[in-house]
Image (cartoon, rainbow, N blue to C red; front, side, top):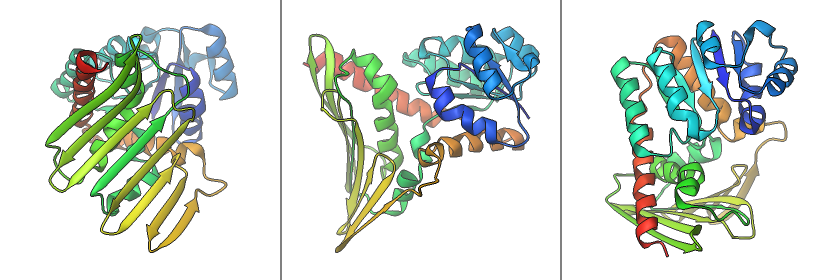
Length: 301
């Protein structure tokens, strides 16, 4: 299977290339506009010179069966659009784009052409989070905090808070009927954000504080006198009368712990098997992000 990787930045090198480089039966092709990076990464993974490309035309000429896009978000619409128009299945880092109109256009293009399109919401595959689907979820609380990272609302929500939005949608045990957004904006920068999603018998709360003093991600799901905590996608603590804690195995790869390995292999398996991958649900997450951006810009101060 011939698989392209566009963009060789930090996330590609840390998370995705170790997964792709270890999978059997892949002919890996790399593409970046930076020759030094292309040479360094190509050498590290022993990629033949003929499989190293400095532009998208050259990669497309190689005839990839699928492409993973890890380029900056600003160029996602152009790159993903060209790949879909060439009938190449696409896996793209979140967000698909920072404007909802671009997201709608790309998802529509994929649907019209019948080309698989997947947005990399890896937390849906992270074992600690996926296992929570079997737990009572009357109340879901997810915090994803940072240190000294206040920024404009659209960038923060689409680039980072989108993980919180998608995870709450994934774990919500029923249809969302009510949405509430609260935020603090200072000097034009979004400092913290609280999202509430509610439905019949459940509430899901998402919190991000970009000036919290701590880099952390904490999920709590509870109901029926049981609670489960997942800390930084690694430590799981169950409360049901007694307290039981377990951590990921010492030799568990970070990419597997964070669900990256699983979402990549799910995408590639679907492409191999000719199964359709529809990004309509991912589009709903982006639409909710747009609603949050509008709410913050209107009432966030």
